Image 1 (cartoon, rainbow, N blue to C red):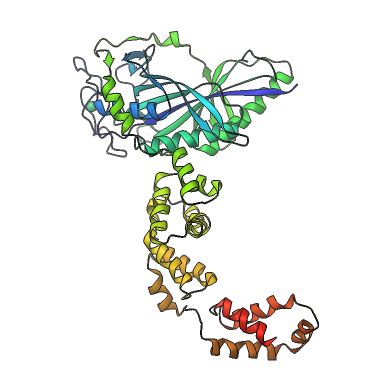
Image 2: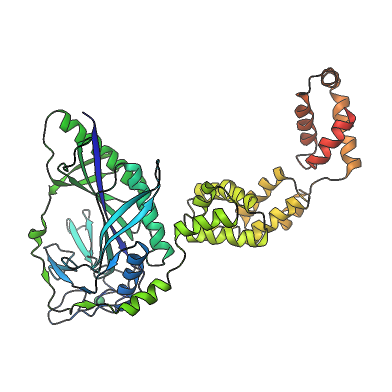
Length: 477
Ligand SMILES: [Zn+2]
């Protein structure tokens, strides 16, 4: 039987506020354990939470950018469960009355554009972190670090509109880009600022009713999300084909083994005994504030992509790549500002620059070649100072050393030879050294032209002006 996967994603994104959601403690990553704590975020009796206004503002930005409806009235609720990294014994979250509902984002995977619904966006606090030390002299120990406790998160719950691992990847990339363009989340998956759980079920193609779903956790990269979903779809297909039942449960992705395995039976909402937090008043958002935030939203990835394609007359594919992150888009625009040849700039960024960055696993912010410096080098090609071929070596040196193109060209002696007399001599020498090829060319074997060009370039270490080489070679032949 042919099955259709039904996938919904829950994303937790850490907001880029300086302080925590209900106290003034710092949200910095990587501090000494338990340095950023106070009575509120360690849950001491008698302490009271106060909502951080920036958290609401950032959530509203995310909600408006994803076309959500903003609730005029929302509530914080206690989600009760016990775990050593949760000092209060409950997490403050939103439950029946979230801040935002009914949004969507547009994605493009393999097929045409598609809308993925967003059921809700709500605010909540993060839990702490456990560090397990099994090799301590005192035996095996677990330590608790409360620095993360109370760090603001938004949970973005998608509708079960996703039909393939590729669509899941496209959705996550688009959502992450939107949050990063909004400056509300740094999108860092390794540090856990953007993490994702997935609900997956299968149903026979054409059937409306949903199958039994499993929840997958512990996927810390886009690649792992796709791999985990592919595995889970295969696993469920095999079970259904054998006439077995899918058990509703939470499964952990094991990156090293490439499998998901059962972690626990799935909790139901009633297991958490949700109830409104009596320490926090209902949240009522002033409509005027919402409109101010809406008016202040920046250009988002989709709009920027369309503008790039239109304004710079570059292919849609180029525009898509160049607007993956705001920093890359800014880099491109800065470079085009200095060297107004949009397609040339795009080619260099998409091939040479992104290749080097990928090799080093660096982000564009860490690129040793600044946009004005790249533009300066491109202009040297136009001016005939260096050939396009040498330019690639110049660029590699710029990337390696951080130096500007003119310095490198001078230091390495890479200036293009555009002296006609000098080139003419080399052409003559190459022709004299290859009499058989010359004769063959003259008898109509015109393909040999490229051979001569190659020989001349070799003799000049690639520095001869290619246009002059072509002209003089034709003349001589
Ligand atoms: Zn605190």
